Structures are given as C-alpha cells and as structure tokens.
Image (cartoon, rainbow, N blue to C red; front, side, top):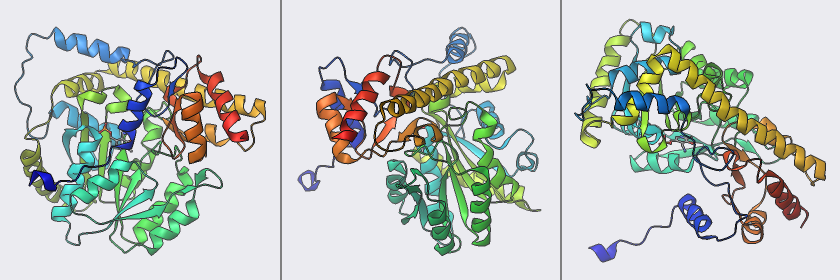
Length: 405
Ligand code: PMP
C-alpha cells in the first residue's frame, strides 16, 4: 500500500523558507516569515515572557504532570476575559466554554471538528478570498464543505465590502462565516467598525454563524481592546459563535503552541445549561485527539494574564512590536513615494498587522527573488516584521526597480 501514496506538494511557505536559507547572498531579506523579528532580524523574546519564564523555573511546586483535558483553568478563564472583555454578560451568564488548544491552528480545528459532528445542517464554511491557507485544509479535513466570499479588492488594495456583503446575502441561511478578528492574514485589510456593524446585520438577517479567528489581538494596533472590538460587538449582538484564539504572535510563544477555543452560546434562559453540554462534548473530542494540551506556554501566558504588573508590561511589549511594524509601514511608503515609484502606496499604511498585500504581481515577486534576494510569497504578501532599518532602503530600491521594469 505504501507505493500507492503519491507525494504531496511542498508547503509553499516552508519551501520559501528553505530557498531563503540556502541563498548565500548577504543582502537577502526574508519577508515570508509569519513571526515577529526585531530590528536586527532576530526572533524577539518578549521581556515579560522572559520574566514569567524565570519565575516558573524558580517555582519549587511545579512538576510535569498532565494538565486537565480542557487545559490550565487559570489560562482559560483569563483567555475568555481577554477576548470578550472581563465585564461581558456572556461570562457572567456562563454562556462561554473554553478549552486550551494547540495554539490557533488547534482551536480552528477543534471548532471545525465540533461543527462537523454536531451542527445539524452540515453547514458550508465561508472563507474570505483570500484567507490563511490553512483554513481551507483544516475545514476540509474534518469533512466540511468550504466556499469563498470576496474580500480583497485588487483595485483599491482595500476591502471589497460590497462584494463581501452581497456574497453573505446570497449564502444559505445558517452558513458558517469565518471572520478574521483583526489584522487579516494575508491582506492586512480589516473592515471598519461601521462595516463590521453592517456585516453583523446581514449575518443576523441570514441567521449565519460567525467563526472568529483571532491570531493578532494586541499585536495589530497595540491595543488589546481595540483589536477585540469586532468579536465583542458580535457577542453584544447576541450571536452564537466560535472563537479560535492564538497566543503565538501576541506573546511570541510560537513553538509552545498556546491558544484557546471558545464556544459562545446566545443569551437565553437555558444558555448556560446548553453551553455546559457543548463543553462536555468538546472535552470528548479533545480527549480523543490530544488527550490534554501542553503546559509550558500555558503557564507563561497564564502568569502574565493574571498578574496586573506583568499584564501592564505585556501591553508595553505589544506596543513595542506593533510600533516597530507601523514604523516600517510608514518608512516603506515614504521611500516609495519619495522615489516616485509608479502606482499608489497608501495601502501600505492603511493595512494593519504583520502582513501587507503589496499588489506586486507574480513576475515581480520572482524578479525580487532571483535578482534582489528578496523572498516573499507569490501573491505579493510581505511580512512587515522582516523589514528593519538596515534593509528597508534596499527593499524600497528593489521594489522600485521591479515595478518600473
Ligand atoms: N489564524 C490565522 C489567521 C493566522 O494567521 C495564524 C498564524 N499564522 C493562525 C490562525 C494560527 O497560528 P498558530 O497555530 O501558530 O497559533
């Protein structure tokens, strides 16, 4: 049977990383990576994470026992507050159940698996076009049908709001709609608050089910509350919904695989009982898949979230990361505009978060790679975190050159 398994295509992002590693040029720039880099292009351990980590190492009471199936209770309780707000009626009314997961990927998967097993209608999952590539695979792997809604306008390099709303209006009632809470990956384009209100109104009318993916809270704007606005608005509007939460980017805990899945039930007299039933089913799914989640990253995140002094320092660290990225956005736009590079470049600063959809085409991306040793995905997405004060001039020169070709 082994010979009947055809080789799978290489993951495009990992292929890109390999080509970058093997390029001997000292000018090379990695703009493919989905991880924060400091101004020296190095991974950054958040100072607050270092502090929490040191405290954990010095704690004589810690051991390597298993966590509970649902994870570390101090983490899951704090994760709920972080996402919906500490004062949310959904918490007070016990309408949210939360399980710690294998980072954001595991949270999306657990939610997908739950919907595939328990949703009475086997709904279609609507994904933004484009979206984080893994969404397609995760939902397909659990046997759900996926469809797309328009999201990015190549013309404005902003949101195709009309296209999105029309697609939701045309989507069957009861469909599940995956929404990026902030800092949309890969485009960096988010709806405005007014547009979110309109999206919620259509989804309400069509009785659609939001599935929020929040991988950049606090990392996008530097403000944890602002980056959670859309989710909190939908909760206020009384939606029943899923939230997949990653702590990879905002704590820099990438490899520690720390995240959470939340199911929020709609308000109602039986909401907390129904939610407890859902929690019990989610626990069985979790048990059969991972038994229980990893402890190390959870302990770090939990310490920070539950200690007001560490929490304040975390907010500072978030501002350091988002501030440097915003500086790179301004710097890149300024340089391209100063050179008179053909085209408009205001989208570089209006887009938000780790990524920018530059509008560069596949041929331009190819030349950037072969001639300039600049590595990015072929859809023209760049990771802003790969830019720094040492390489931004060179990158602007490279972009200018390929655009004029
Ligand atoms: N969703 C989106 C939109 C993402 O960009 C990411 C990170 N690339 C994730 C989920 C999950 O990542 P992780 O599993 O590392 O938390």
